Length: 203
Image 1 (cartoon, rainbow, N blue to C red):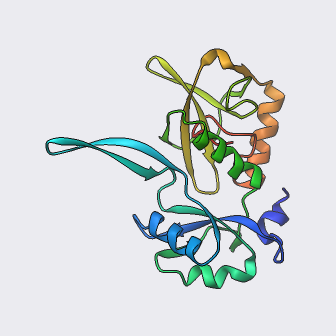
Image 2: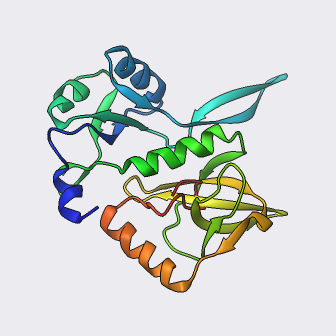
Image 3: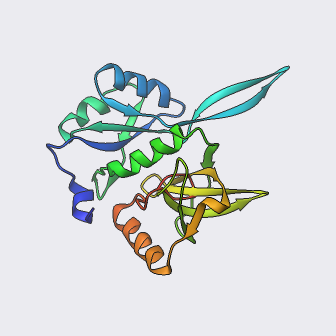
């Protein structure tokens, strides 16, 4: 994707965009937009929280205050008029489309049923590629947390990342050239699109 495409998009083409919502309105916005016919994607993760005398399992947004939406630019006023919606994520003052390959990468992580969670934002580091398993072909940053390894995927446009657990033996390092190329690409697209970045499981 070129920088011009990112800034302008294609007014007549249906593309993915990131909708910024009011605090804790992600699910309500997702349901409202879906209810009026939009294709919506709200990636979530499971977490256990202690509530007084019991443990409650919650489904929380992986990207707090954001919902992914497929639409054409001509529909943005309808989107912005939806209760709970704050704005569309923009670049250079225009709605910034998100490559479908990146949205698909996030879906694959969610559908893999592997442990995934938000992660502090990362934008550079050593890149690896998953060789086999449900995430085969996805690329990201490999980190170690205690005794486990995690692949980090970053959404540059949102300034957020997610992490998914992986087997260290299932990944292979990418060459330095591939790392540099991918980082240059992310600077242009503003949303890492080298498969899925290890920092948040998206790339």
